[in-house]
Image 1 (cartoon, each protein chain N blue to C red):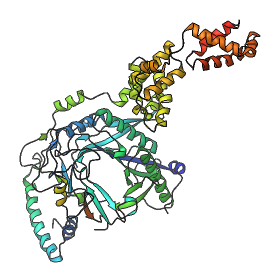
Image 2 (spheres, rainbow over the protein chains, first blue to last red):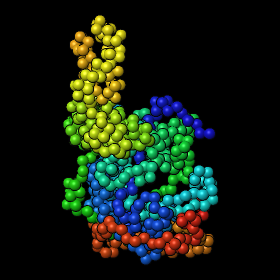
Image 3 (cartoon, each protein chain N blue to C red):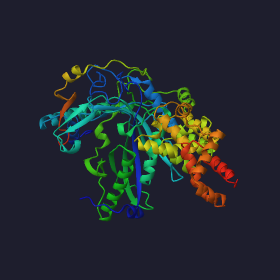
Image 4 (cartoon, helix red, strand yellow):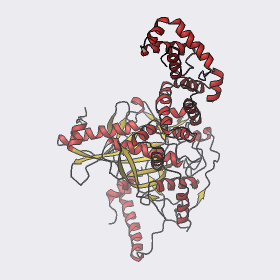
Length: 494
Length: 97
């Protein structure tokens, strides 16, 4: 049984020191060193060739887009791009690499230094980047015979090499993160950055963005680092935060009991939210790194790097700053829209003419609720920003009430066409016809003589019942304010 | 001695080479001679001469990001000592060292 300290107590007594290593699969068409496809979910071992299988006589050649993408990442993280670097062989025997070595970078990473600013509760934390290097991904193993697919207790393993050789970027932070929340926020920010740069789909559930967390504790005020553990297998944002919390509690309990933290690789179990020890870490000299003789060195020119920098798209942080300034969104607004994944949609809605506050409200309230009901993301709903802007516009012009607007949205979501078409086919426009409305008002008064008398007698709130009757008669297509005014006028209270 | 017998044994284990005691003695001596010979190069290599890792003075050899045909799976798995469910079947990974 693992002893755990209370988390709040633990962080009161110790300072947590967290560094993250994030692996991002680059979204190139072909693999890092050969022309095999990188498609996720293809039948096992159908995207392999002599090069990625490491067959004798095959030679790797660097994919130019992998370099381009890695440089984009480095520049977006404010790293300096090496004007000279080499790939290295990392030698180890493990069935996930058929060559018995992985082509990686060791002492000469492509990008060095840099930082990423992340925001938590309106506070900015600058996370230093140590390095960004390029390598190739490994194959995927399926462990058979053990409990829940774990390698421990497995009788044998089945390996699919489709993933082996997909370009992978490893982004290493300085040990500057101090809380599980900032760790999570860093991964959120990094993920958004990858998507904005167009270098990866960064889908944690598909493994195209994976995270390892190095966690250690030390006394507050101590400058030396404590012994760290490295937790692997963090495949969701929730896992990143929970695993770090768990490690802090676990290590605190050990230190409290006068014990030591063992430097080891730990495995995170998403089901239980706990980590367990695995192999103790190899010395890096055991990998016997040496410069990869089959690849030429990289010597990127300043012109090349400048051109990549020039072509960088707007980055997520720049975009948020712009949206705050231009549209008046508060940091909280922006955080909610980010978390809801609707920044793009809100911006499209505003671009199509809607006032920012209303665009935000529609996507965060009504549409977010409908998405939740359908078990999808708001951005996946079958309604576009311009559609929403059109609905907002019709409400503002008085041709739709907010109740009718929701029905129009229903129609659009049901695939009945754009808003104007739904309004036409469902006949949803506000009843403006004075005579039709007048008839409905007269009918309501005639059908409720008692209520009408009360209103005539000066009990104005009683008019609500009559408004309700008219709205019912017009199937909600009348403007309640107009109906109320008309009723009061007819009853001599106008 | 530039390399100890223990280091050679360690390297042999990392390289999954089963060396017996006689082979270890023999290879330790040979490797020591080789390392000493290489070390002599260091005596003439000045600080301004970078170590050579590549014999050909080429940089930035790239290929366009384009697909090329992969192998047929039957062909791939025919090379595997054992296969199951379209995958390479390998012995238990842990506890093997």
